[in-house]
Length: 102
Image 1 (cartoon, helix red, strand yellow):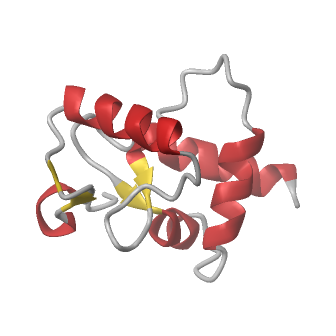
Image 2 (tube, one colour; image 1 turned 90 degrees about the vertical axis):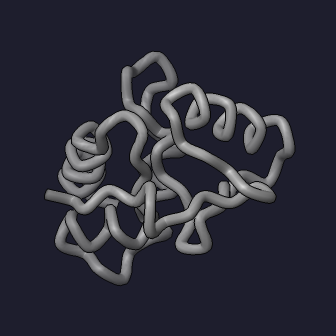
């Protein structure tokens, strides 16, 4: 994968405001690669853990966490709830909390 694409993905994620979320597909589209949602996941997985990247603000198109481990899902949910994002049955209402990308 191109490090330029990863850097573009990171730039977009840094723009997501507190209290809002974006989907993997949305971030990919904003990066100019609308069919590269998995690439967004790869970029997030390879970013420096010490960075200030608000990784928790990226969720799947169903409004849920895509982490396979329960502990990571709970951490993501807790971080988002701290920002004011509301979960109902483990899901975010994208009509309310999805960032418009502007």
